[in-house]
Length: 513
Image (cartoon, rainbow, N blue to C red; front, side, top):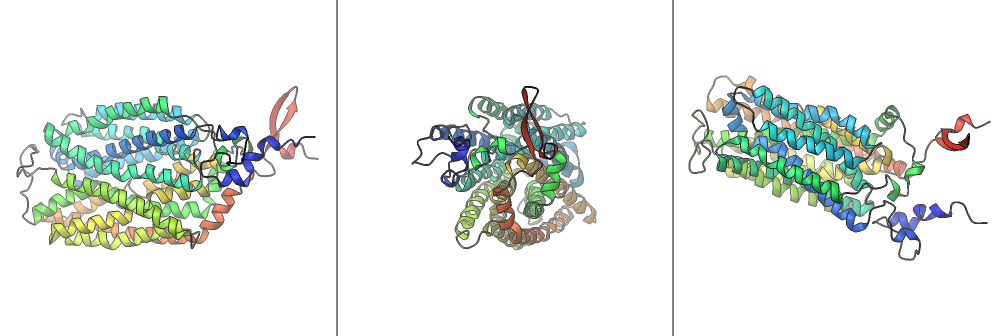
């Protein structure tokens, strides 16, 4: 008699599990060679990653466009540092609190449809925010908060789709490409925001670029991206991994030390990047005024020309270029160093993340301190600090995917977003602004620079703390990875038994005698 498990054997064989593409080995003549376990062809899988990278780039481009024109926004609405910091805080809070909802939905329903709806909503709201009148700053805050709806629907789901398309080193490579869109998109946000502001003479136009591109991305998402089979490519077909309740998922995640500690380390990264994203261009502008290299911004509005104008967004342009370059260098070098280090230790990923944060801390400190003496030295230290800071982006995403089982990944992504943003960049821009305002002894350009300089020094110490969390992650990473790879349902998992002519799922304990 034939073995009843023969049909599922290729999914569990060592040859298939070791194959990076998730397809059958070259010796196999089975149908799985033509159709991968994910249900998506290799060509379609690569196109899917390309579309997801484009959307990720647009998300971060939109997020940092506001920071690129922040001096103009402050002047337009006549607001101080603390109030302008709320723009980033409101957006992150909305994004953070909605992430668990989309994480729950992403583990249970069609992820492609969820992303299409969310990104369409994000594009419409972003476009609407560009028409905020001068006396209604609250309206800009509300619309920036609603933008978080679209980003939450995407960021919690996109990495899990990549995880269901690729495994092992190929997955790491695809996550590297995906995460490159974070610093590149952020840098383009500064560049596009500042240049559109300069050309149009109105910062409102800077917010109208990404919505149009967002609708194009939705079109590509509909016709290019295909929903893969959840977890099938990892020798854990979906029918062998039953879904548990949200509470059970959260309990399992909280008992996963590698996930929790790496999330705490990433929280430190979010705190530092959130602070720098909003305040670095404004700080560089104030440093130039303090050093006598530029005249203070004056007048009722900014004319935004590069020829000697005091309200020029040149600092945003330069910082955007630095963010793009350092992001590419940091993400690529972090993955490559980790890959080489894995030949010697399976703890390479958290060790590289710790190294990046611990090296970024002194360079960020020096960039802030040297701003009062040398603009060139400031840019050099920012370049080095951001390069080391960017080393962890792809690695942290990969850690989450290989220490968490497939049916909990969207929930894990959502939980990591909530915690990292709640204690990280949700409050850090506002905190830096409030501390800056509290340190001012008088309303002068000297104190505007000094107070912001002292408040930004907080970032260096937070980076050191993040490095410590990643060092702690290295202690547990090997054990938790093996547990996720060898995960099997509990003895009380649902099984299928006949009932009145139909099959139904019941707990094992209910049929055991």
